[in-house]
Length: 122
Image 1: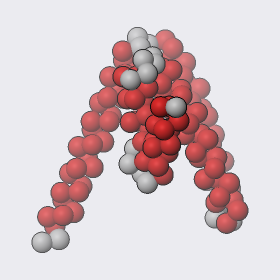
Image 2: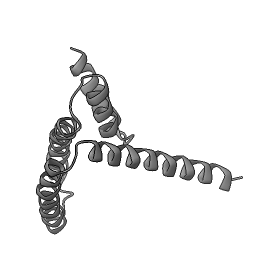
Image 3: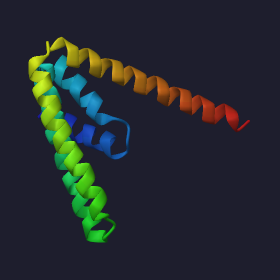
Image 4: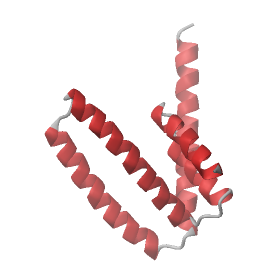
């Protein structure tokens, strides 16, 4: 039941662009004791399902560019294959630290942009 509630809340955060994926990985690793690789894989599946529903909605509204979809899908598949193999070779602590660093960096950049926007208006 807890997982269903968290999945619902994460989907809301992802939908409004807060970065729910990172929060979901933190929840899975720290609260549910998932390994880092398992948490990232679970997050990826969650993201693909959310993206598929968005794709269906945009296809219905006919707001799609076929070439962009083809290029991004091809590069996404290639990157997934390469980095999943790399993640299996590396020490599990490395992807965990990289993800943590990227989350911290993303937070710093977001805060910087918010403060820059707020103080540049005055």
